[in-house]
Length: 244
Image (cartoon, rainbow, N blue to C red; front, side, top):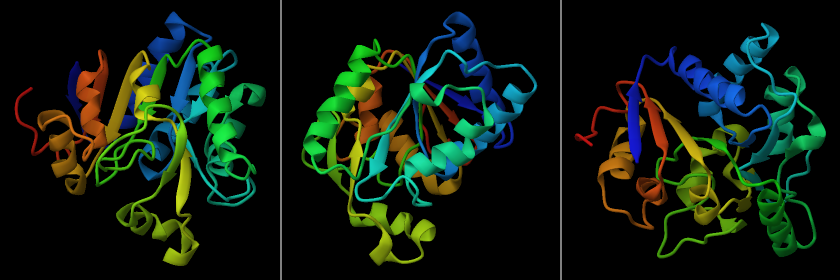
């Protein structure tokens, strides 16, 4: 079931933080799924601010990140481990031993994918997952194509995804070609999903995800099959949605 909440861009991180705060009040040791990128940055800033004010507590939380680039050392400024530490983990009262991000530099990537999937299952599964959405409909790094992979896997990145990330790397040659990502099956097992999008450029793909057919060519459309998904959007991102 998909719900849609529309707010001003400045209100969105507050709304998402409030949703997560309620989740942690119900279950302080919740397992969270976390993304990276420019969209969730606003949410992380709000979470850091509210934790500093004592309004939210991460001390019993376990986290699993959605993905990580293949080939980037954890000290690389564009690795997702670096991103999470610098933008969120080091600013809040979370036990770093309870934070998990795929290892993109391991020699055995397939074994790392199995290890990560098993670790999620051993944790009891993810209670609450924050998502963004790519312009081509990818969530995590599950890219459009003729088929999707259910479990955590190595994904070859489409050129439009790599092009969208050039701004972080300075040159297209520096953008990794592959990533480890949770699969669509992993994502659909989550108890609750909150997807954030804003801006006119996301309007068409948001509408396809919510109103269009469920298709591997729009991976986010599979969220229509989930029992509890909330899209938190600004007016521009919501502008092409039909009634749901």
